[in-house]
Length: 357
Image 1 (cartoon, rainbow, N blue to C red):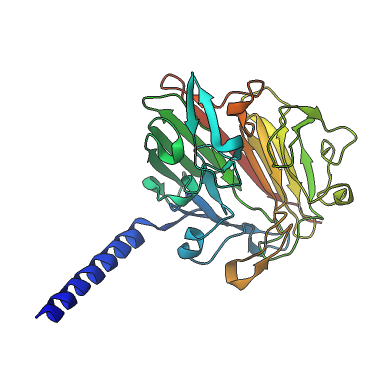
Image 2: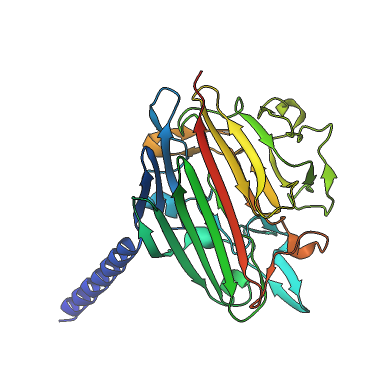
């Protein structure tokens, strides 16, 4: 009799686990927005861009975003491929900060520091799809998330949304918003897509030409934490005020680029960077409202991606517009504090084009 009871208990738990897995599978989806021959695919797992397809100079459609073939691979991802990262993107030193006299201890996931919001940041939660229009005159998708008070150690309830929208020909608009419901809290959202304009499986991006509209950077210590200084890029390998190849001064660097730039313009929507891949003819012009941009050349990337292709170091570049890293611990940096009376807004405009020779 006891063996039958044990069997029934086992069956109950198996059915319970199956039901839970089935619910999770139903919650996570892939959504496409398209305009002509311009296609963007998004998943609500991490609010990620998982594919951007557009033609090259020969008219061949290619995917210019690194990623995976399955949702399960994104769930195991440690690179934040295509994700919205937060509540605070980049690093917070010592996994702690003080706000209005209260000390907050976060969850460290990068040595002693907190990176991209902690071990379960916004890139590893299921967002709600609140609006979705696949095509027509106004293709877009809006994803929302309620981050509870104390999540990963951050104070206060926070309502977050991101909208991906296609406009005109080859324009992708990313709009990030956040509202603190009951407490002041740091917020610094970033869109973490890995771009390779030649195609996700086309090799390194060192020959891509890039121009970054910034004359200063925030230098780092040996733990990748800002020193608090803001220094000019003139006469350094970080100077991209005039267009040049990504890898043209790699011999002067230890391991590629992974640095925050202070953007030049004080305008709300400001120029950030222009990237051009001569082989495919594709170009990307980025504008944003944020005060900084993290330029990262996937320096330590080794990962099997789409179609089994193995991504190597320098297989892509990231241009993560953002507030300055560790701003909560540097009073001289632009504030990243959001209050119930002051909401967060961050918009990026990607304009793609194809140059034919």
